[in-house]
Amino acid sequence: MISGTLQPETVRASCRPRSRFAYGLTTRAIGLLAAGLLLALPGFIVSSWGYGMLAWDALILLAAVLDGARLPRPEEIEVERKWSNAPSLGSETEVELSVHQSSRIVLDCVLVEDLPEALAAVPVQRRLRCFPHVRAQLRYRFTPRERGDQQAGSLYLRYRSGLGLAERWAKAALEQPVRVYPALRPGDDQEIFLARGSQIDLKLRQMQKRGLGRDFESLREYRPGDDLRDVCWTATARRGQLITRQYQTERSQAIWIVLDAGRLLRGRVLSQGASKAEPGYSKLDYACSTAVALAQLAMHSGDRVGLLVYGQRVQQQLLPGRGASQLRQIVEALAQARTEQSEADHYRATAVLARLQRRRAMILWVTDLADSAMRPEVVEGAMQLLRKHVLLFVAMGQPDVEALASACPSNVEQMYRAAAAQELMGRRELLLARLRELGALTIDMDPSRVAAAILNQYLLVKERAMI
Image (cartoon, rainbow, N blue to C red; front, side, top):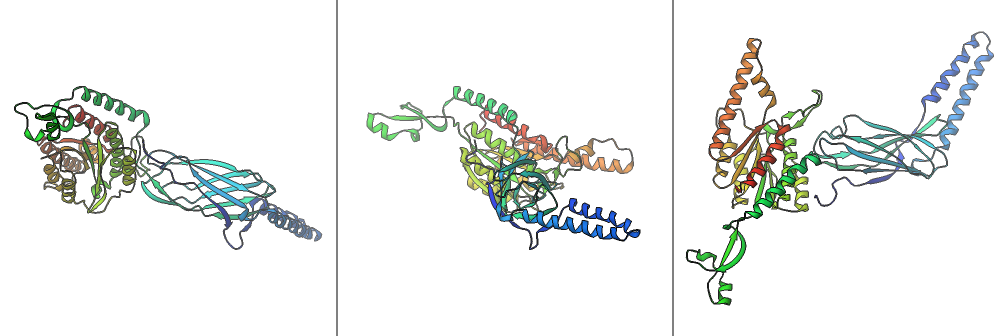
C-alpha cells in the first residue's frame, strides 16, 4: 500500500588499502615460524641444527612474501551491499553482500561490516570464498534496536590465497544513511482488522441516511421545510422550479493521530517474552507502530489521516490525506520522531490542532499522565478538543507501577512502595474517568498491547458513526 520502496539504496565501491602497508602474516605463517624453534633445541647439542632453524624460517618468510605478491590489489576487488527489505523495529532485516574480484586465484575473504549499535547489537563478521571473475554472495540478518536515521559505515576486507601465508587488508567505502522505521503489525493480524473495516464500511453504505452530513447525494424538488441554503439555483434556473440538494453522511472523515514526544514517552518497556538484558522499546516506539497500523486501517476504510508529533515544538505535521503517498509520508515522519528530555507543550499542540482541523474529526491522542497532584495540562487540552471532536485518549500504561500496586508486600519498605503505586494508579483512573464523563474514549494499557485496543476502538467509532 506504501508507494515506492523503503529499503536503502544498493551501494557498491572498489576497495582501497586500509593503510600504507596493508599486509600481514596469517596465523598459519606465524605457526610455521614458531615451529622452526623446535629445530633450535637440538642446536644446543649440534650447532649445525641452529642453522637449520634459520633456513626454515627464511623459507617460510620467502613463501609468505611470494604468496602476498600473488594477491590482487584492492582496486581489483569490488564490493556491493544490497538491502532485501526496509529496516524496522521488531523484524529482521536481511542484507546481501557480494564480492567480485578479477585476479587469477581463489581468495578466502573475511568481511566485517561497520554498523552502529543501533542497527546490530554485535559486529557482523562473515567468511566468503571468491572465485575469479565470479560474483560471490552472502547474506546476513540483524534486528534493528532503535528507530530513526542511522549511518552504515564502510566494509572492511581481509583476503588471502589458498596457501594462506599472507593476507591483505582492504576497505570499501559503502557509507550510506539507513532509516529504521516503526514496527509493522504482522500481516495476518492486520488482515483481520482490514476485513472487519470492510464489513463496517459496507454496512454504512447500506444504511446511508439522506439529509445528514454534507456529502452531496442527489437533487430533488423543493419541499416545504427544506433549508433555503440547500437550494441549487443553477438547477432551479434550468427547470423553472425550486430544486434542492440532498446530502448524505460523510464516508470519508478526518482522522488525526497526535503523538506526545515529551519525556514521559522516553520510558522503555520490555516486549512480551523479551529478556531483562534487552533494552526494550520506548513508549514512543510503540506509539509510532500503532500510528502506522491505524493509518493503514483508516485509509483502507476510506478516511483521511493526518499526523501531529509534538514536544516543546511541533516535530512532524501532515494534513489529512489518503492514498499510498500519504501513508508513505506518515511512515517517513514517524521514523524521524524523537523523544525530548523536557515535558511536551500540550497547550501548543491543542492550539495547532484546533487551527488545522476546524470541522468535526476523530483524534487519537497518545500520551501519558504526569505524576502530579495537579490536573495535567494534557487533560486540560483534551477537554478543549472534546467540545468539537471525537477523542480517543490513550495513556501509555506503566507496567512497573502496576506490578508494584498489585504485589503483596513482605516488609515495611515494600508496603510503602505498594501504597505509593496504588495512589498513582488511583489518580490516573480519576483523571481518565473525568474524561470519560465528558464523552472521551480512553485507554490505559501496557504499551506492548495497546495497538489492538486502539484499532478496535476506531472500528467501534466507525460502526456507530460517531464522527
